[in-house]
Length: 138
Image 1 (tube, rainbow, N blue to C red):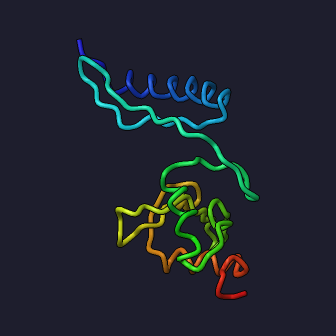
Image 2 (cartoon, rainbow, N blue to C red; image 1 turned 135 degrees about the vertical axis):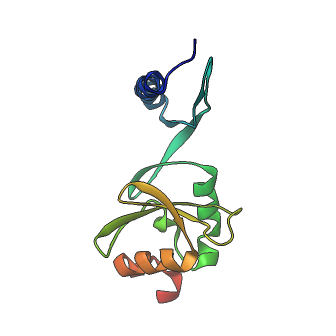
């Protein structure tokens, strides 16, 4: 007998709750990837350490580390990572840099929804809120 979509949706909710408790215990964040289902349910789980800066905790992904490495080359301080910027009525938070995406390498959230953009757009919303984070403005 196959699992139904409703069963898998309920399972995901329960797994997220359980994983959140375990991850919190170890100072980490957990994420469940795509789920395929039928006779079996298959998924991946990613657990990442939390790091913090002056803006609070953030998930220490490889993209976040890449942003920290590239910040100076982009003309920015490392403080841009995890900075909340209000721009045109939306809240943007830079979460990382994807070196395999040359056109839209910046990972960010817009009102909590994950998105990606080019470097110039990211600089526009960061500069609107916090121009002091630009190295060339100093």
